[in-house]
Amino acid sequence: SAAGYSSSDAHLPAADLGQGNLGSHEKMDSFTRDQTQDGRIEDDLKVADLYMKNGNYPGALLRYQDAIQYDPQNDTALYGIADALCKENKTSEAMADFESYAKNNPQGEYALKAEKMIAHPNKCMHNW
Image (tube, rainbow, N blue to C red; front, top):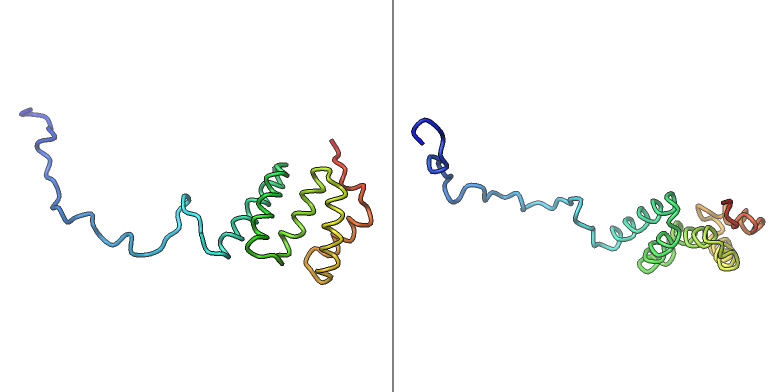
């Protein structure tokens, strides 16, 4: 149109514009998962922790188990498995894992918590 703007009036940029080096550095975005071993473990533990806080104990258990596949001695995951089982009222399985944790990780970050749970297995029962 004579007085208005028409798309045919637009000046298109030269063909090489917009092809800079934005992709030349590694930048993780919210849709990219770190596939390194340490990154996977960290992701699994973060998600498991979130699941535990939100009451998704089966989901947390799976994520702790995923972390163990990459790091069989991971303190947080070993304790987390027992804790998730406990929250699921799987007391005998949880107690076996708490006992294994306490025996194999006497100086571990969660050793005292594990020993307290062993001493009081009734704490595995949900308070609905």
